[in-house]
Image (cartoon, rainbow over all chains, first blue to last red; front, side, top):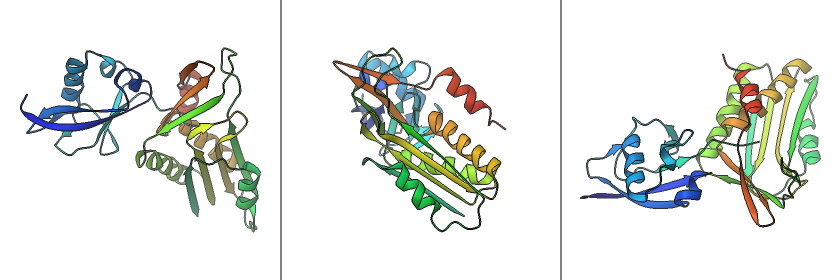
Length: 84
Length: 153
């Protein structure tokens, strides 16, 4: 794919399958969080990000699958929060 | 009104935190505090050598601050303190300390309860138990979610 590299951060249970960070290629004109999930699934062979409870943030704000990503966005995927 | 939220890797002493929070407090009739401790055994009885809390710098602080600010809007409290650790926490050490001061005990109790229910399910941490040769993610239980749901508007 012709595109740009995006650094992805991972936290919680989802990091067991994909590590704590890696780079993925996204189209030059960007994509959505949902499209990135499917892209990572295809590239990694793991469907962990498609499973229930796997959420995302863009630039450290929780984001839905419709959120737009641009080159330079900071994207993270994570399993459910567990503080306290 | 003061809202103080602290995120730190170092251990803290809950008694010191409470003493400092109460110092000079002459206008409030109640202070309620809660300290969450790391346990030395998991739910299945297995030994836990450390509880490890991963966090996402920037996002984790914001999530705690948002919860504390929401508490001030909801309860008649004069001050709130939330201190939360991240990293490896040994059994017996404090994970979290919350305190709420109010003129009356009901609001202080409810505020501390609310803070903990939301921190358990909405603060950006990922918690795992590390034991001899094993590691296990700890996620909120159904009971945790039910407790959080009590505060839904």
